[in-house]
Length: 251
Image (cartoon, rainbow, N blue to C red; front, side, top):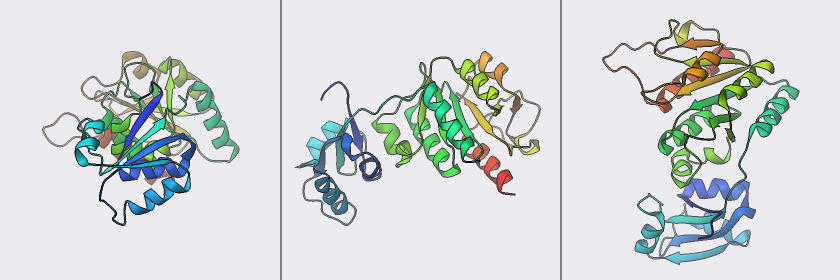
């Protein structure tokens, strides 16, 4: 496989990507003998766009996926363009031009691709316009992320920035209020007003946000924890926080 190519696994991920950017597709491999209602439309779509279609035995597909669940579908695609600070500014400006409220999710130090995929899925469902991550020490979009995100990796832009704190300050200058989640916060999520232009910051499990990230936030909040565990999985916590913002904006 060429250096700049990626593999995409699973029916949802391959279909979502093909519907949005069919020009990136090089070839798609399907499980030989599978022709059910979920796969046949995808085969037809690939052929419609002139994408090479091949059929393989399960063992060959398993070897290509290196243990990942592929649902009998694997695509080889050209790598997507990496989005940066400039793209983030464009997204915020376009949002404001449409008189919509900016709504962003910032992930600081989230390195598990399963967590990134789940956060992308949460973000898509909540209407988040982009997820911001540091360029280093953070999970990147790969086949696992796309599979977990179930199509959301194709709809929610992932912005990689060189300096997270500097990017946060730039967002503040654009009128965006930045809320960080931290166990040491004194204010509960449910006691905050979360209705304006906003970016939610989630730190890595265990470590939380880095010091400079935490200090750059406008406000710190925490989830009220009634049980014996000290924290929630970052994707679960992000879903709770994002939909509290959605609830308040709709009320």
